[in-house]
Length: 295
Image (cartoon, rainbow, N blue to C red; front, side):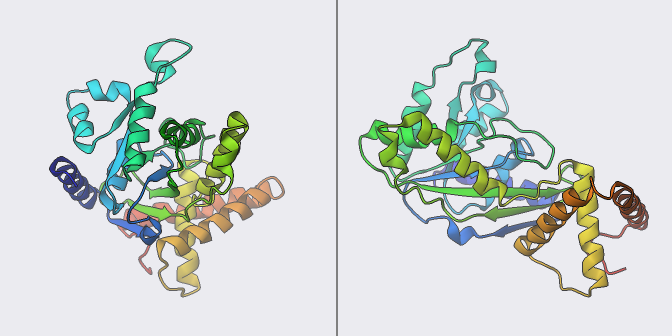
């Protein structure tokens, strides 16, 4: 890794270690150690998402970043040190069409040289724990870059789910990084030559499904917080051992499915349950206890 990238990586690790009580990574071994790679991640925590992935992914990543950030006197130099690739968006130009030829060329060269690209396919950061519909840019970038090179690059596509608890709270929040299985592209590349738009739509849907399967889509931060408290209560009552990030995320996914099923059918019981968990959470916070404390 170039010196500038290593410096940014070290700085990211230091800041994350200072701010978060815990950062846990599951599935890092699923990242191919070499060869062209496209990493897809959800985007819930602004610049922190990029810092987190640069810090924990065992490959040099070239992030795609919106072009105006490169003009920022503080952020711009840091992006250049990471080798970030600027992306021009419609809202940045105020026109109906945008020109991203250089972005596709840079991405194509990176993949052709066996490099790794980081992209947030939702297209924007938003704070709520729910996956926004994916833009088609990630699929177009991958398929278009390979087509521009005139050969199959055999790029790996790896989804990464970022899960946060109390993301803006100093030393009490945590972050989980869940690396999913690489997508199998199969005949997708061959189909792109004859049906480009349909292929892009299908691949975008597959990317969205793969990312969504890694997340806990609580819908809002308050429900997410209560869900975390409910899990800690269940583990304490069941005398269950502390779970790693993957097991914990699966518990919360099941709880969210049950919550969504019960909410329209038993609204009064759900309201009462939320009120009780909220009351317990308030008492716990006043006492200075963390979620993992058995008290």
